[in-house]
Image (tube, rainbow, N blue to C red):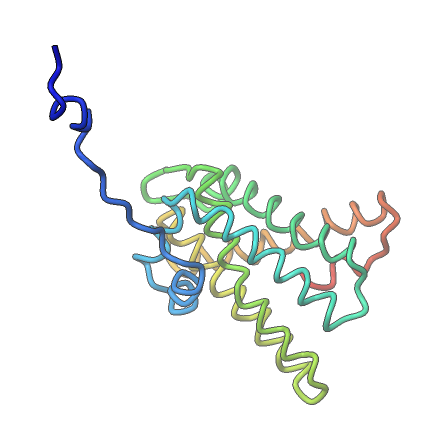
Length: 194
């Protein structure tokens, strides 16, 4: 017969619950190019939802500051994110070579490249007329840097190879999204933010 102390004793010791880091500290870490933050994002399943929010925010920013339609902005942002992640995860190791010949997981690549889109949120400053051009250029340039940072972490390559991979992925994405826009009849404005 069981005693009351045995009934109420948990089968397993209580686990301490730690809340996953919030989206703001992770974005701050990516903007600072903090390798520890990047590795943590790549490993955390909770970061996937946050990456989706960042890409969605980039699409909404684009709708606010340009004459791009909602559908075109969403297709462009999510298409570039998913296709870019697939390019980096599958073709990146073969094309630019990696010191360890490692191929990153698609999930890790999606998470890191999603967070690499965070500078696109700076494009909101483009809603202020005098800042429109500089804000867009700064957002694009910073996104290129954070994308190269993510590629560097994922593939373990030098900054030079990471920038080459990021630029090559951008060029391929422009062509792919342009073809997609022709197929869907959305118009060529879809590729303007890539």
